[in-house]
Image (cartoon, rainbow, N blue to C red):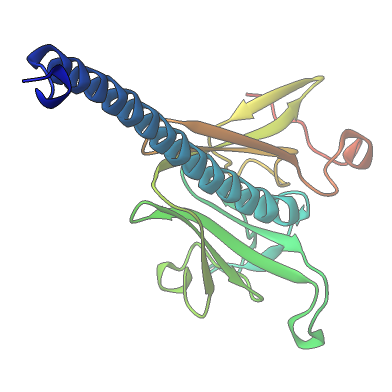
Length: 214
């Protein structure tokens, strides 16, 4: 029998299988790397959109935050501002889109079911009335997969700037000079935002803002 009619030898078969295995391994590794890269890009894209959404809300809420007082249940004029470590309620200036609603809005920040949620309302969100906190509010989720949020509040003490993790309206006559919010996601990453509030710069409050000695 001639060599051309003998078919493939065992060595040639093994060599072909080895080449095929290496080629499959390289192809699989490349596809896996591409899949991981694509997944990472998608995650980063979602995170970027989330940060842009949060940034948008903080830009108009924190930057335009103003002191606003309302009578509480004891008929005392109290600031509609509640700032603690993980929740925030404030008033802010808003573009007048409806004359009936005026130019002030009220907003609440909190985490619910793993989502950073904000509540809006054209009338004061009276934190001293529990049943009033979320009544007739518009609700928006601005970040998902959130583990927790935390706030810090800036105030001037003499010539220094102090950061507090709670804002006691009984002691403070104004809202904070600046507010920092940190969002901790369930994957362990953290993002912080810092904004100065409206009408509370050193120049606009000098001689008017009471210095709190602590």
